[in-house]
Image 1: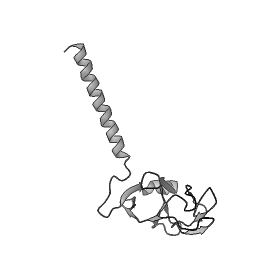
Image 2: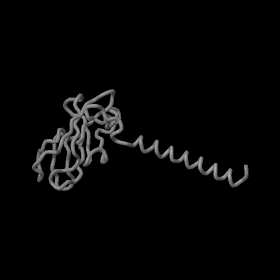
Image 3: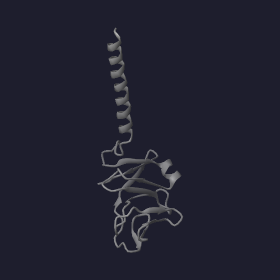
Image 4: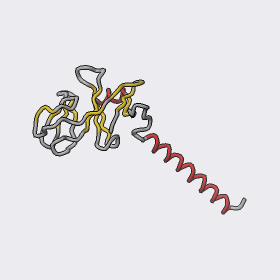
Length: 141
């Protein structure tokens, strides 16, 4: 085997290895990999949600979705559209107060997305959730 052929062979082999790694990484990051027959998609491991208090995924649905555990019933998980209904600012979960707060104009929402106060007048859009095999699953449009 001459040097040119060896370098070409090594180059193609390296490219194949890189592309395999990239494809593996992309499929591992796919938010909806694992959709079940009912249309629920795996959102996050329950342990990760419990550790952080809330999980925001901006690539899960048409708009960003935020998931929290209900402060009054740990068996209930809420998933809401993370954009405030007033001017579509990204809401933040304030675990100590158990509310979503819009940083733009101060609108507040309950864990289940219901409007509490502020310039917003509509609730946050909600999505069905379930816990399965220590994972949170969400059904988004």
